[in-house]
Image (cartoon, rainbow, N blue to C red; front, side, top):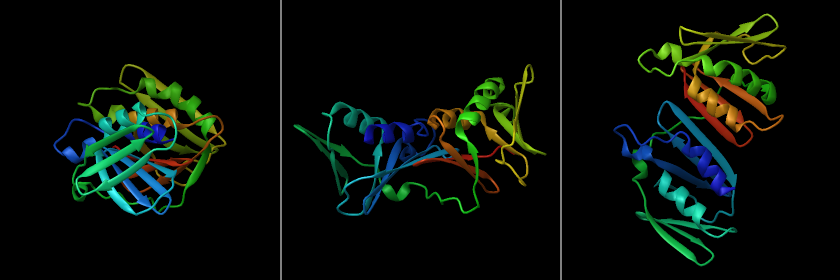
Length: 227
């Protein structure tokens, strides 16, 4: 479970940019809940795991290094302890000490406060697989890198184009955008969302003025909307 959680949160981590702290994952332990956060500021993914917690605390660790260490240890329980500038990982006969990143530099991300709307995950995945390939990957024209989502009379519509091809998919009977203004969601975020959905998972959407948050079971993915 820990390896899976680290892998999912790492999808939002970048090795580019001017903030070294964003090269890391934020681990936040409160009681028996461990929240793992990865972000490049445009895309943020948080994963909540039930663990055997002892002392509450926060640490930021280089994402790739931590993932490689946890993947390398023997299957079974993993003991993780943070102290000062180091994180200690013990599993079976293996023991590692990793240098942490100053946690005070990591951005704070608020939980969504709007009322969620939901949609069947399996149907959404099929629609995204048909539409997202038509979006552009050219960041010089950011408006074409998104998927336009707009409410219709009896559902909602997904539209993507790179100016040479156009994909349109209607989702009748789905209330994902019921009563909401149209939004333009980065196709990168929706591609990651489709990978999170398994079977009949329900997807909840929380909308704010500039962000959209998608929740699938214990994972929340927040992306900045394109204007």
